[in-house]
Amino acid sequence: MGAVSIIVIWGLTGHIFHYSDTWQLIINTGTTIVTFLMVFLIQNTQNRDSKAIQLKLDEIIRSLSGARNRLMDLETLSDEDLQKFQDEFERLRKRSEGVGESVRKAAHKAKSG
Image 1 (tube, one colour):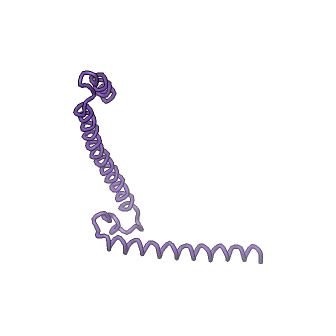
Image 2: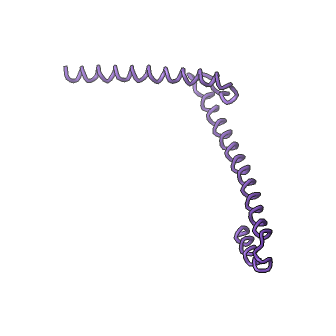
Image 3: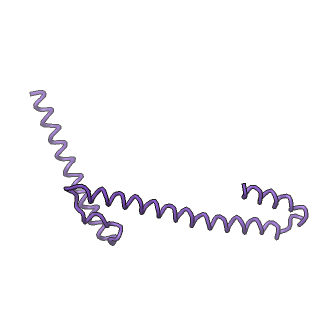
């Protein structure tokens, strides 16, 4: 409501200022400042949300008996260390896909044979 009110007041004052460049500059400057502040607000909200999710995931990892607790603070690692973890999980995924395929083939063979 406040933004709409400001725009209406600005529009109504246009004839008083003869729709001058300064009159237009006022609304342009105001909207630029508001946009700039909104970017910071959105970024702050996203950072808080990300941190909350990270803390929840850390708690889940900590509570699981077979989980590797060294994964709890991944956000503090360097890009190279993160890449090593990503490569390791990619190898694990490929290995599990291979095991899953072998199990499916064995089950299919047992059914048909």
